[in-house]
Length: 150
Image: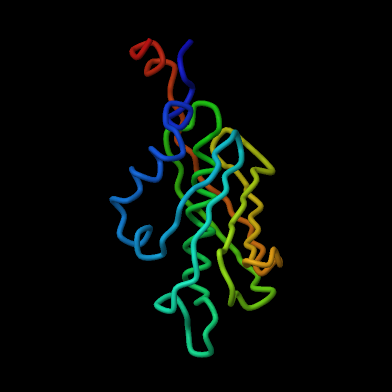
């Protein structure tokens, strides 16, 4: 049986290895723990280099982790080859001071070209610290690609 997208062919460890090519992924220390259809979960540890004045995690770091998590939840959907963020809104609810931090996205609406994802970010005490909603434009495998790769 043919795989419908890239990620059923790759384990979580293979995805983590692939993403080590991206400097920001390495700098933040992101590690995916789970990839399922329409869902992913990543974690990263507290690091003083990722904080702003006051010792809390910088909002840009949280935003980047949220974007990675949402993007890879989208890539688990049927026939999705790639996806790019079209829009991403985040509400910071509590300061993130203690890790490890967890980010969990869930696809809540899947259209032909647009996918909407609800994303939650938690601190090391399981407190909900940020809530995001994003839209991704997806690029799907075409029928001709399916036939060529069968």
